[in-house]
Length: 147
Image (cartoon, rainbow, N blue to C red; front, side, top):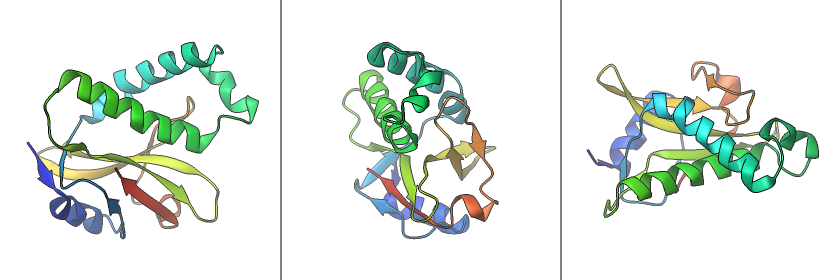
């Protein structure tokens, strides 16, 4: 199913996340299970192969940090989505955000949970996971983008 950016913006507003920048007219969803399971594992495996180092050691290099993980994971998800859904004329409802004061980057997505659209925020680094959207410290200072 496709959703308009206006429909998705209402979901963000319900989660008290405002001023999300949208670049497509329509979006499709991926599953939360893929985002934090198979998709994240595959991203880390491919990233390790491309970089020639264990993904857990990448952050230690200080040249591949939070924004690289967040932007890279979002792009990886889009490439995998396009690979398996050729001809789909919609963006993937996965984005990233950068915090203006904490100097940190995260991913966010709109997923279907128990029949309702909801916002989920993810830490894409190997130590990461799902971040509770009710914890305003994690998202109130972020600028979010869905490309």
